[in-house]
Length: 166
Image 1 (cartoon, rainbow, N blue to C red):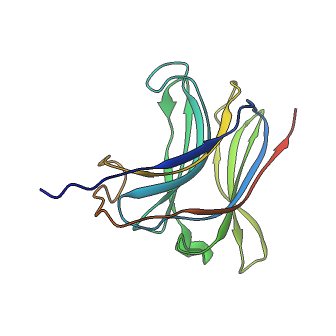
Image 2 (cartoon, helix red, strand yellow):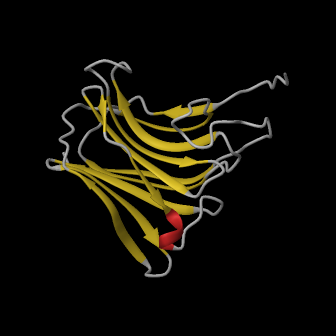
């Protein structure tokens, strides 16, 4: 059995926010078995206090994993970025908006030179959350691919923005 020393990185805000527009320009650490993300989070995982809105880029795939957690229950959808001319291996722009009706995810299409809505979840987010960026190793079989080969991986973040609606 080969053992790798593993480390992950994370940056988070001290401030808790809720309704508004969240934008990131990032390039995933594209090694299989890793996830690069931009998200909001509050509460304790696995409990009714867990609220979260995710943009996760799955290393080794060209998938944008979107998810919203409300009171510990999730609603995930994976989106193939190739249909928008995008790649996790390039610096790309992603966004989500939390409003009184739910969550909208968008990607910036260079083909159309504009933001394009890729998902709408009519799930009301009522809790205030911290903003996070991170890069981590997934050993979860629900996230393809779940095997990490030990190669170094680096995610790059150019811009992180939040525009409050409250």
